Image (cartoon, rainbow, N blue to C red; front, side, top):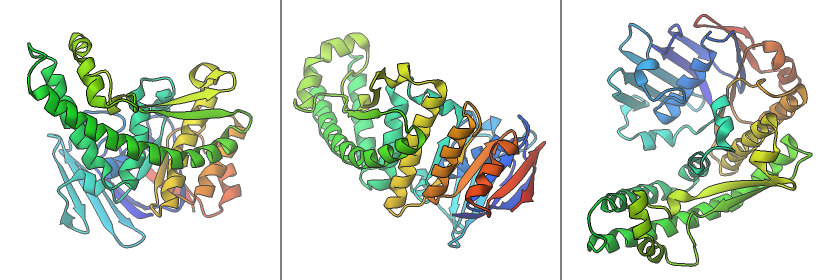
Length: 358
């Protein structure tokens, strides 16, 4: 759990340090800087922003670098700095860390914000990334196999742009793609099966009146050697310009008793489904002795009072450290205090973070 956080050069936020509790609410008007606090936390965990791919936009005007530093309750210290050229410096207990993947393993964070809500309706990439995020933290070999698969996929896609379909390199990369795809599939299906138990528990609390079936789709026919499928699809893939079957096409599907979830569910229900999926991952990590923070942006958006109460109850039961933003404190704070009197309330006004209660 994070004990203290120090920020400098982050968007419109004043340089500051503040102490966090287990449950933390940041409220303020739109544009006050409350989402920038979550963005800074996310940067510390992932090395990137969830709001922009251009790091310059995250760095405060007139500054050349932004820095996020934290001291954890166990005494560990983590810090990240990003400059306007996009270069970064990572430090753990004062020692430079060269790899973001190694650094990220120290601080899992699950983000729930309005732009996540199209996860149910969007293409498969977001849903696949959701599953793979969990695999990164619970399967030590996953990232290595994922990188090898991506390399083989890039090589095969490059071959699709060549003149011939008879190049000897086809078999080499298709065999490697097939091998890594099967390894990824086996890891994914094992973790998905365990995650599913936590998903059902979360759905029972957040969407108690709706039965939702969640299925994993491999992205290729697992009963036929993928190398054979790739060889047979070379001509069609060449016409399309990309590889159409494989582990990179894996997906999650959601069905209700009345039909597909993306069609049947309301906007608010879809938000609760996304929350259930992500909070189930937090519960999974807790089960594996890997504490995970939750960043929840704009809690009250599209949720009625009953839905907010169920969501807050879920968060409290996870025993995770939670950072929540909202425009109005009254939409969250009274409910939260009924669950935990030790919660902290911060007011964010024109880039200044002020502790009001806790």
